[in-house]
Length: 204
Image 1 (cartoon, rainbow, N blue to C red):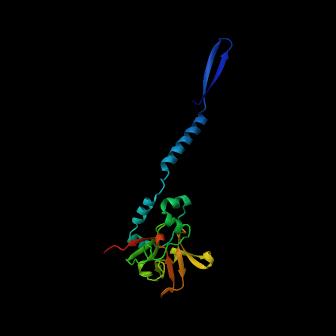
Image 2 (spheres, rainbow, N blue to C red):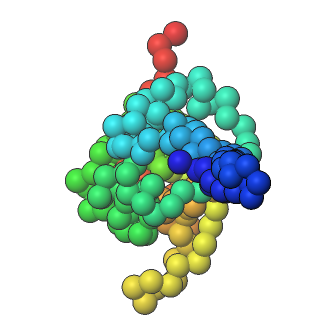
């Protein structure tokens, strides 16, 4: 397929000499390209679905969540990858800075002992020990599990000035923090349930 034929004629003996010249370099390049394409196809990770992401979160135990002591690396995903992992409501809140309805959400009246993780990446965010009834309609905490678990950002949307709270690992929107909380911090971390994943404490 990749051969070139050159015809030489000997004048005396009228003998045709046919030489096959192999384009080895060209063939080598093409084969390498095909192999690389096949390897990339085999090694390419399949798209992570909502089910896969839920399975990932469900494998995080209380012990694992409690042992997390530092935010070592950022989680960076494309917009398409976030849409694959999250439901439309989770995506609206976590990635588009949305807000869920008060009262009618999963964790507002939830007081089981355990840890609340970021729904986007699984980082530990809040312990149930700091959760309290703020009567705001959203799950509220007076402190994150670690100071570096969240980051603050000024939010000037809706003609207000508020302090937005983001997950420090994947930059997902979680909610806002206000200075009307209980002691010892005086803060109210007002979070969206859809931005959280709860891990219960194991029975001893």
